[in-house]
Amino acid sequence: MLTTPAPSYSHNYDASLMERLLFRVAKRWVAGYNTDEAIDAALDTNSHGMSAILNFLGEDTTDAKLVDMTVNEYLLLMDLMHARKVHGCVSVKPTQLGLTIDYKMCLQNFSRLAARARELGQFIWLDMESVKSTEDTIAIYLDLYKQYDKIGIAVQSYLRRSASDLLHIIECGGKVRLVKGAYHESEEHIFATNEEVNANYSKLMKMLFESNNYFAIATHNSALIEEAISMSKNTKFEFQMLKGIRDELKHGLVSKGFTVAEYIPYGSQWLPYSVRRIMERKRNLLLLARSLIQQ
Ligand SMILES: Cc1cc2nc3c(=O)[nH]c(=O)nc-3n(C[C@H](O)[C@H](O)[C@H](O)COP(=O)(O)OP(=O)(O)OC[C@H]3O[C@@H](n4cnc5c(N)ncnc54)[C@H](O)[C@@H]3O)c2cc1C
Image (cartoon, rainbow, N blue to C red; front, side, top):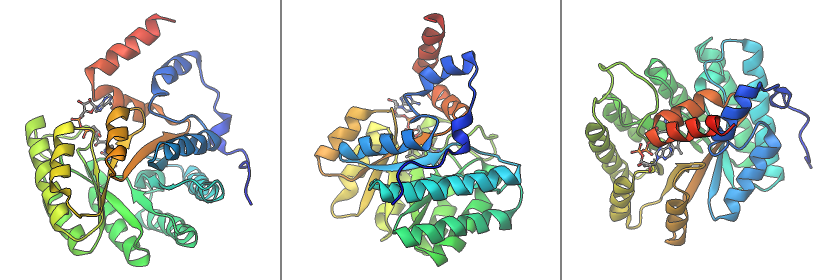
């Protein structure tokens, strides 16, 4: 039985003072620097009636050695989740498994994770990143899905292409996590206004409710969540939200009997993730400014 993991490279991070200050703000969204903190956060999430989706932070990795270490980190994490009886799964970014270096390498790395997930009976989610990698991510997903069906993929409602991608994934029987999208993209690829992104989210959500496939509604937007509830009847699906955002809403959904999962990132590469969370809401910029001034 596994107890404490061998120190992973995420333990050896020597944070500068500025980073430590920023981390104070980021701490609401990330579990911490290492695997132990991630497992503790996941167990805490479980104790509130939610399952946990753990993500080892990192993206756009161009160093093959680092990619290999990341694969090992996920394998270790999956074993630990099993050993510590965490109710949940992992969510992985294709560019942290080598997509920027080589498509085949990335697919092989995901296959290694899928093989372990199959042994442990765990689920794996593929995060969706910038539009540069959408095509490849879907191709990798559909290939993996033939090997193991407890795998899902994120689809972004801000992308104009997503309706046809979703249709294709649904036809292949795939499992989708519907999100709005968090990357800075050029105008040709995305819907320009929030209203259009929300309208497209509703449209894609209806497609998911009409399919027979399992899916996840990953948003903190109350109107969209209400819309999902009104369509839910006997459909099997789950709500997913990020750690540190709209906790009361999560608990309300759990108490109404809905399945809710919390996405919990951890690791030394917390900055790009935290910047995306800060930029999503003006109030978070104030929070950051206040935290720096109080120092
Ligand atoms: C489980 C999960 C997985 C995700 N995976 C991906 C992925 O693979 N690829 C991807 O591109 N994106 C992913 N995202 C991020 C997503 O694309 C959005 O950027 C993010 O969820 C914010 O949009 P929203 O739908 O919650 O709605 P919004 O309309 O942006 O927010 C609704 C309300 O939620 C609250 N809120 C939202 N964001 C914040 C914040 N940062 N701080 C404080 N309050 C906030 C506010 O009250 C806001 O009014 C994921 C999101 C979730 C929940």
